[in-house]
Length: 296
Image (cartoon, rainbow, N blue to C red; front, side):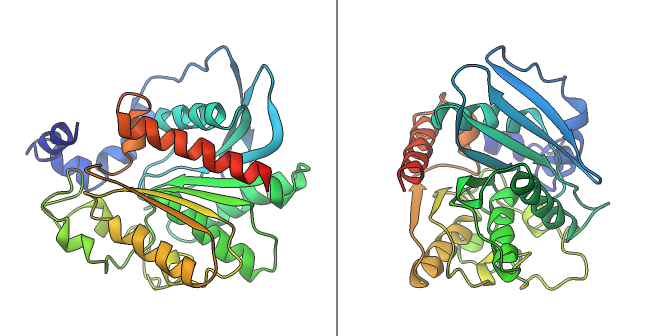
């Protein structure tokens, strides 16, 4: 699978479009409409500037907690069917928790702080809807994983109660690209490697703002009082350091962190669902992490 991704992304016709995010901008409108499985109910929630999708189980829904999903896409790609699949998997491994996925505004039309504002609005929506902060789990992949942490920095600064846990898949936490893996995995990363003209160097979201801002690059924030975090990342990723550095810093500041580095894996390998042993193991790990949050 890793070799296949490398071949496709190095193809001279489409490789650049994959790496620089051009395809991510278009895929949401190009893919076929998503058919909600019969076991779920999907509700579209329209807010002032964006919309959300609430996936709930028709049978035996788990109302103890709810998962707030912030999708990836480098802050330039919007909602797509892969994240609806993720919502179904989160529901499965959590034994029926509802999943609210935020189709937040993206760059270049809506640079920072649009995504953060929308994530915060979604969090406030859940609170206003009767959920307590200790019932909310924030989950995200790539940019969404970084956004989950940025949201918690923002909530803490506003004196608000933080969610009970964070699930972050290959979180993009350092938009300065200063980690050592940007160099050590330059030749190995099948998705972003072998070029500096890729999505992880894109400045559309940052604009003229300081990339050291913790709301943009959560690595540079203060993690004290953060909830427990599960961070999953592949060993071949250029973004590996984004996970390793955040985990180390958060632990030093007293946060419970489980960092799982999956050997030989690529960016967001969890999209393989149950087709890869590593992806299957990752989703089992997510389920166990949620079980611990339920018991706390």
